Image 1: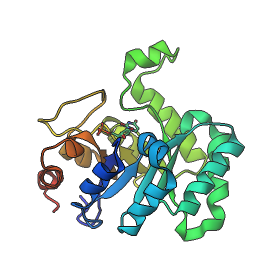
Image 2: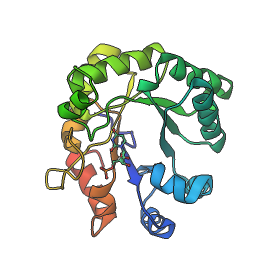
Image 3: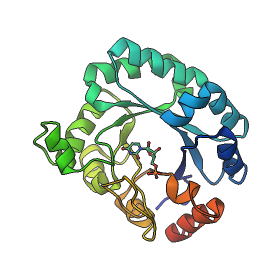
Image 4: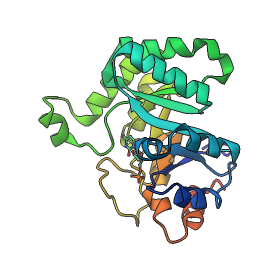
Length: 235
Ligand SMILES: O=c1ccn([C@@H]2O[C@H](COP(=O)(O)O)[C@@H](O)[C@H]2O)c(=O)[nH]1
């Protein structure tokens, strides 16, 4: 288990910018990274990301781009120009789309963001795939999409921690696994389906755990984050 990594990425999903900044002011860039998703980016735009950067945080821009290759590549370039630490696209956009996203980042060299592909959303279970006409289990579908992401040269995938052991075996330790759907044992599952506790996720080998509501809706968010690290016994 890594003693160094800043493994928790706090998902900032707030309607009010000030509410998010109030939480951020309690946090430390040495303790966690931050994720900005569709809700806050649609409300507050790149300026919100810049504010987080000015406070010293690494930002995962979780916009899950899914479009034609040219459009996705240009959007990924815009994210790189914004200076984000991590950006993502949907693996179901296909290998050509993912390759275009990777290629446009090449001129950024060492300063390019990690480029990650979303496999099967952690809110989805077998019946959701069946409804879409996909005859594979979530694990099989994740494996298939992760294979496409690796072939396209991406840095890793968003998946459930439930798939982590298999993915690390299949694609190697350097293939980065980013896992939402993390729930401390006492927390509500909310709309997540494929969940694991923080300790289970780390034991399974995930690199970064995305955690939102169990921290952001807690009466004392900093205490909730610290309790997660205590559970992992790495802080
Ligand atoms: O498969 C996915 C991909 C992204 N997410 C995002 O992660 C957070 C999870 O928040 P919680 O409050 O901890 O459920 C949220 O921003 C999602 O958009 C995901 O959950 N699953």
